[in-house]
Amino acid sequence: ADLSGTNLFAANLSKADLRGANLKNAILEAANLSGSDPRGADLTGANLKQANLTGANLQKADLRGASMAGAIIESTNLR
Image (cartoon, rainbow, N blue to C red; front, side, top):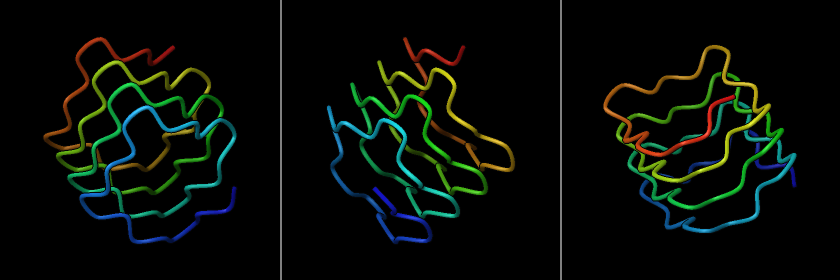
C-alpha cells in the first residue's frame, strides 16, 4: 500500500498488516501501532513521535530519518 506522506495522526492501526507498505514521510505521531506488522515497510522520514509500537514487528523496516522521540517500543522487534 502507498501511504507515503499520509497524515495518520493518532490513528488506531493496532494489529494492522502493513508488510511492505510505503509509509515514507507519513505522520504517525501518537498512532497506535501495537501488535502491527510493518515488516519491510519504508518508514524513512516518518514521524513516529509518541507512537505505541508495543509488540510491533519492524523486522527489515527502513527507519532511516524517522523521528521516534517518546515512542513506546516495548517488546518491539527491531532486527
